Image (cartoon, rainbow, N blue to C red; front, side, top):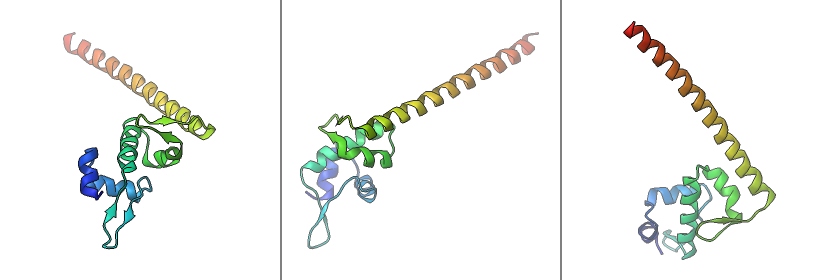
Length: 120
């Protein structure tokens, strides 16, 4: 199938599909006229990429995990590298959440103090 059909079947615009190709995540064949030609597996691959992006992974991380991805979910084979990467991403998210919680607490303290001065 050509890039337009892949775009229609996946809901991903052609520009993004070319980006995935540039990142090495999607590998089309080339026809004699230079057009990209995708097999039916490309639909599954694009779905996997989108779901992993939705999980907050970078395209570089997805490229690293892609050989371990199977099925539309995707399911990830439990190889040590996969577990390390996922644990590191979760640790990073936990750190960001902790930072946001501290920021919110501090901003609430500033707000309360400022409102108290306004009332007093």
